[in-house]
Image 1 (cartoon, helix red, strand yellow):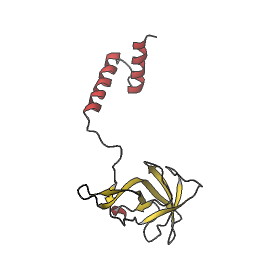
Image 2: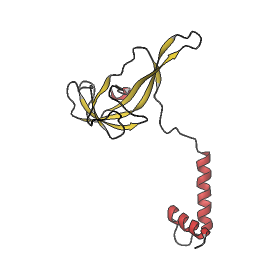
Image 3: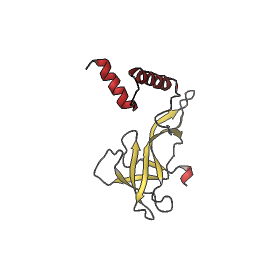
Image 4: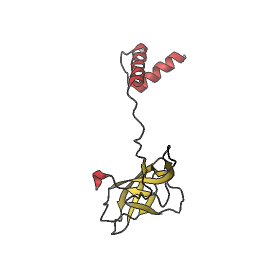
Length: 157
């Protein structure tokens, strides 16, 4: 089989052509799709929720323990939180944040707060008690750790 035939066969299979379509049809469709991809507005892979917080910034809760004996947690891991039934219910989503480096005023050098980095998201999956709950990390941009802060989005409060 010559390379052009392999490419055409692959294009037919991927694009779902059948019947009387020609190799030129597949190439035209493929070229049109590539052009659309180049001109489509670029969306970020995720919305960065990081911000500069005050020196005493805290979330509504924290990750207090890992169900598995691990230091670095990621998507799929189950954790315990100190968010109780007065703040969350099963199915609630919470953003995970970590206090980062100090942010200084460039003109005075004075500390004006801290970088609060968005690390990921947890979903409350059950065992919601008055002072604790069980959650699953559903996405993370870096390792999640015991002690990371949890913030409940305003649309869920």
